[in-house]
Image 1: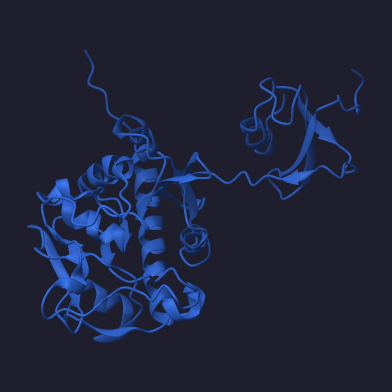
Image 2 (image 1 turned 135 degrees about the horizontal axis):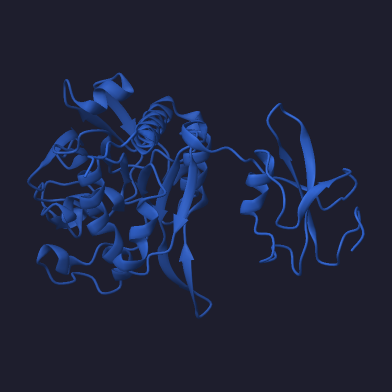
Length: 334
């Protein structure tokens, strides 16, 4: 192959070398991401390397794409987001609401790493790559067997595969001091993982309001203001949002019944349903909320403060991890 030619199926990508010079790379080999020159080589080339079938070419291809080769403590933190498991059109899918990934990107200034929930043995390696964990809301509930109950309503969806990942993940986040943000079902997962129980149908409990959204309403109304939440004084949540009372949306049928040992209630609804918690033993950021701050996060100052605080914690965790990796090791002479 002559210099400057492009093999069929080759790919080109621009990357920035030290000094800010943008060059165009060609990946030589069959297919868009050939084995002969993996995409990882682009970062190698951008930092001054060469070879592996990659070389600089004139910027002429309309198939060029930009690769950011940031690494080290200056790179954006990665946030692990475990997926749901759903059946769509008879096929099994890993599913994640885009609003969660977008909130991580746009409000936390982090990169979402969307992780399949196929069992504990498969998700553990991801933990060494990430700097925070987001447990999302979901149409499916935590299986009540995890808190010693039978299924109350068989018509409601469950996701036992997600349970198998998220419940142990809570303990690993605490053990590592990794920032943890849990939303709606995520808050319920934290409570169950730590030994608490749930109301499977809050609206059937005497003295409790119906916290579910109206299925006949549009999304704007469903995610609109629903009720106030009182934030405990001197709590971490008060420090984050700068208020003792806020108004939140409400889209959940289940909620915390018995608060798990080791959890601290940060906020409650007017009917005394716990709306926010943190893990007492967690050395850093750990927050679970029952409402949905990810919804139009950039338009809600309280929600934005929550996701920014989470992003700052992830950045601090990444920096500390990078420094630990770079720390010199002392060896004792034999």
